[in-house]
Amino acid sequence: AAPLALAGPAGAMGVTGLGVRAAHTALSGGLALGLLLHPTGEAKPPPPRGSAHLREQVERGELLLPVIFTVLVLCSVLLYFKVSLMDPGFVKSEEEVKNEEQNIVIPQVSSSIKMRRCGYCMVKQPMRAKHCQVCQHCVRRYDHHCPWIENCVGEKNHPLFIVYLSIQLVVLLWGVHTAWSGLYFKQSWDWLKHNIFLLMSFILIVIFTIVVLLLLISHLYLISCNTTTWEFMSYHRISYLRHSELENPFDQGVVLNLWRFFCSCHLTAWEKIYFHRNYEPV
Image (cartoon, rainbow, N blue to C red; front, top):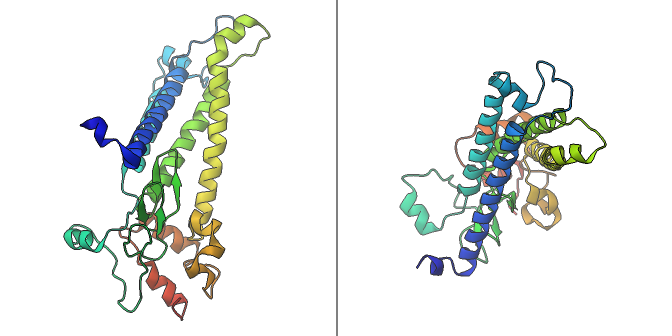
């Protein structure tokens, strides 16, 4: 019965998600263990006290930094699974809202504001929501569908996604420093055989670091403007932005934008902000 349950698009997406998450966990764990356990070279000068190589610190009994590094790696993996598996802000149907209204807080929109129905799943779409063709759901304050987490980034999981990227960047920068400190370059085949893992790890971590850094910077900029990746990329195709009197009707200043994004405990009725700043409805 289990294989049959995985049939079809939903099952295929589940299998793909399982593979991506397994690959992420294996890669993170493998690189972290490699940096912790990779032996130091035999024919190199003795490492100075305070060397960044984690294996040398463990051998000297200096466990504080290796333990902190391990904890950060575990936190990044746990945050990855949390962001990957949590509800990004799927829009509920009217029946689901009635059944769950005692357990969840959904912002109420004035009855004078007409909400359009999604042409795919037929739910009433709040402003800034978009239907994701991969997840087959409408997502509140849709930002993008991330193939690396096999989930959408939306209003509910976007803040945690930023926290995950931040911790991941710290781990990667630490990994770059650790891998580089363990390399002592020599032009010999024996040296290459002994350091091939460390060298490949360094190159791989540098690539990941650049990607995560650019992603984090771009997201922080968009958050400070209170816009999303989808809105930024598709501005001229989105009716509520194209017809707005303001360039960005949701921008309330950097401080308030950041406060609303990171500190708000409830979903936001974006229609209220939009129509408060734009006097005529779209």
